[in-house]
Image 1 (cartoon, rainbow, N blue to C red):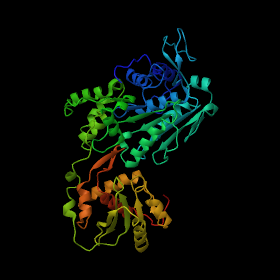
Image 2 (cartoon, rainbow, N blue to C red):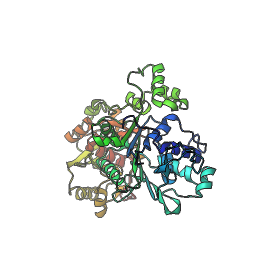
Image 3 (cartoon, rainbow, N blue to C red):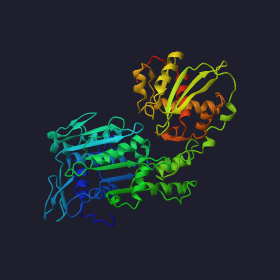
Image 4 (spheres, one colour):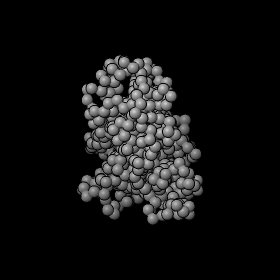
Length: 503
């Protein structure tokens, strides 16, 4: 869309509706009245542009801002408006027309109406949280925390932790993670796809495609999707990266995509604090007035913070975050050992990103008490996996560890193992963060040995880091054999009971 007529938008009235009926969600300003800054207000206006017939022009909107810019908060406000507000075209305003809450329309301005039936989803990856947006919606619509105006005009809404039912059986709002829904039969009217720079796995790409198609099922409802994201890591093939490529493509259908991205210019010398602050002010725009830019600028000097992380999260610049493979574990080669392998005390199972290859790794303890990594088997994924793992678990009486949010955990392997009565240890994101850190620390401290296996060496050579909630785990480019032995080492080091199957 080039030079659209911004006066022909339902967004002007919706901005006023949001500021009249909503309060800020959880945080330092929770409960306070909303006053949208010009940048976010314009984003809403552009998202609700209509043509001369009143049909919406934007089917997908992508909002990319630096960390802390309250992207999820804005998405929550828009979801509230989609649930209750005048969000679909009804007619063109007559002179002197005023809305029910007091907004004065310009003559000829599009006037909206609420949806007859709204189906709103807040979707995130397992690593992200659907609650980022849903928590805002919950707070702003709950009878105990909403504004007096919303309570007076819309009554006490049925607001639950897992679902909000709209009055008059007009629909619902639900928070879901990508693993909770196939979304194939849905007829959504509005979808928030949160943190799409984390949507890297092939199934997440498929889910994004399914949801996009679902929005087209109800012509009168004119469904659309809002993606919120910090900038992606180049080369990780995330949904956010794909959306950016689509925005820059020559496809005629991209005119239905609103790509709204703000970043600091690459020309700033961020090694100089003064320029770092200027870059931050540029990245945050109106939000620079309330962000603690001084503290953010000083965090750059922390040796734990990489330049890539700083540029991506605080300056919102797309940069490759995977560290050079040779620098990840430089001590690896000298830890190779030709001694006899100890007994396997724990087994880890991992798949590569495309679910083409499966690795089974083990871990044990040498006679001197040093942890020992033991690669067991690597083959293309097939029916061999569950019987093989069962034979190991039965023979060794050892626990089996699978990352519940990784490619193996999201596939059929856990079900296949359950069918064979193989206990799988509970393992969540916090465990994976610790497992990766423990293996890395052991290598750094020369407190680990391995048998110089080709598959494991190749996996280490491809290893890198990716950030998760301010911490780090192995990148998606890391070979799955390293992931498998990482899980196995965690199981052996944490005394996991092989019969403790609560996953």
